[in-house]
Image: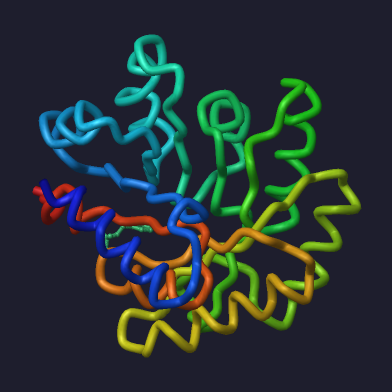
Length: 217
Ligand SMILES: *Cc1c(COP(=O)(O)O)cnc(C)c1O
């Protein structure tokens, strides 16, 4: 199945870069995909999935958690502050920490729940006005602000502009992470995950290359 092909391509890219493929987490982004395709990937033994909406993720995954306690769920879409509590309950990782107000709410929710999902600060590497994320120039201060709230930011995430060379954005993200002592890099999607692996991605978010094209109907 396409999942195996994606895994092979990740391993080959890691090898080219002299990296251990075991250091790269493949997140299968299942948003909008029909249940049968998602179930097939789950049945094939894959356990890390990404969703971009809290409600959709709850509908799809809450019951599956009972039978698959080893699932890991990543939120890869924007998080509204009124959904923070639900997100902290449901997700193992939140990749879209993109503003101070959200950081404060997450810190409160983590305190209340006694646990905090793994957090990635989203960086708007292309400085696109319509896109979420902290601007590169504000990234260091943002990471420091989160740390000041005892919020454990573990890595950075980016979504490069569609029409630009992704490698430049991946390299920028890696540089910002390195100077902030962050070891995790979530970068690379269906069209560019091999490049991302070569540039240090620890997490790649792959949807259509695994499940087929999304049908937004
Ligand atoms: C949808 C989505 C992906 C997966 O995109 P594909 O191109 O289908 O691999 C990855 N990351 C984010 C943030 C997404 O919203």
